[in-house]
Image (cartoon, rainbow over all chains, first blue to last red; front, side):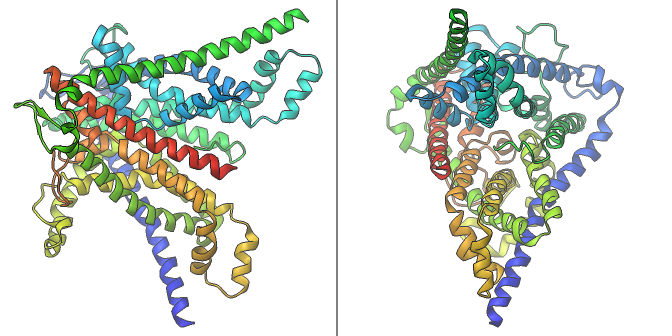
Length: 277
Length: 300
């Protein structure tokens, strides 16, 4: 009897310790990003482009603009495609072809991000060179399966009664799907897209040999562009203390963007529409 | 009537054609990756997978040290992370009061949202010094164990494994927690009524009951660990190295591609790296498809 109680106590205590083990690094990362990042941030940080390697000063405007361009293009490409395939799988997705597509999409949603970069490299960069377009393609390989999955789940979650009510009124099926079913699933589809966007903001691996990086302001989507995560990666591995500081500043900016999106989604969810990952 | 049918068909064909396009691009991309790795695969043949060499100057390449590093770090991370996750998920369902548990699990989910490159940045400036100056001296008395033999600069399999543990634990915690919450109250109460402790209920009811769903979480986490790129690249030391010593620098499939692909101007070199990407992709597809099948079975 004694022994059982002791084992139970040990179990309870180790569980609490396990929570601490996983939350401590989180706290440390957040604090360090804020502390080091705050030091880097100034007006110049947002509006100037980098000085030559090793020269202090300058900013990361190139990466901020690049990130905005890449994320906008990626969402512009991925959302319509992902949503269309999601509707197809949810509303018409029976039979063998749909099952193959569904399995592939699920498999691809766990694709290592660096492989997405290689794919975009072999398909686009080899023929057209480094560009924001190539970066967009690489990011879309990651975003599309995710959007397909979340929108399929959102649409499946709409009760059948609603569809039947619409059809019973004589509304054609495509209008029922577009106006009624999508209307009901809108919130959850949007959340899926937002989470995909947060992920796209933070991805650097697919951009290494597609968007490539560029120390100047963005002028054309057919040229290489920089991005926040890409800049963090390069600067963190550089030997210059000033660049290390800039990397922390960029990390702070990136964390603010990504966490704001995630918290916004979390606030929208409130358990009611909880999206499964 | 006729117009309605036409609208329906049009909509359906539009959706179908987008789906076919996506499928087509997926296949195209696979083929393209395959054709670009053919050069290396043809020259080295089976030796590409069984030799232990990576020498860009002598133009000798193989996948073995990277496959080793990938599975070594991911497997170690999975084992440790599994133990932590079971404890955390159980604490969050049974031990900690509900409202605190909600906050804690929100925080744990937040970990999954941190960009990989930010974790890598933190790893370089805080984790590496910690390993070099604190953990390594502390482990010195244990250096007779192969796992802890040798000296370290901090950049090591250990650093990569720690980063991976941190990154895959949230995936497992959230799936485990959901599984634990779905265990019927009656089953647990029956055992509590017999005088069982919380530990016994966990061991004999909650965990066996959730086994299938937990398996899915484990596989998803494993897939993530195998493919994680930047955080690992930034702390692993980037040296092909087949050794059990956690303190030695190493390499993984994803990190060698991230690190060397831009330098690879020699066609054989870049083709070898693309072949490594193909290997990584096949590994991750297998892991994910197995995971997907398990999830579907669990749902039925």
